[in-house]
Image 1: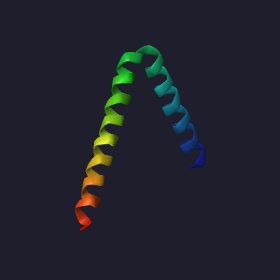
Image 2 (image 1 turned 135 degrees about the horizontal axis):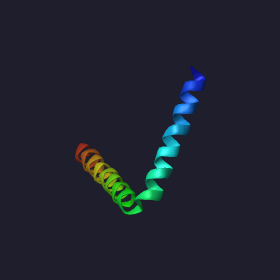
Image 3 (image 1 turned 45 degrees about the horizontal axis):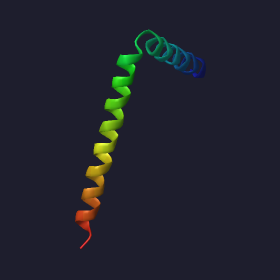
Image 4 (image 1 turned 60 degrees about the vertical axis):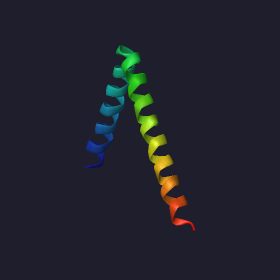
Length: 54
């Protein structure tokens, strides 16, 4: 089972590398969108925690 997990990780890494090399603009847009989502989530969590404080 560990071998399958290891090879699946290698295959996923190869796919990501292939995607980055063949369409870097699309990959950059995906990364930008993901980071924007994380930023929005962090801001929402911050507002929630601040709302709990009196």
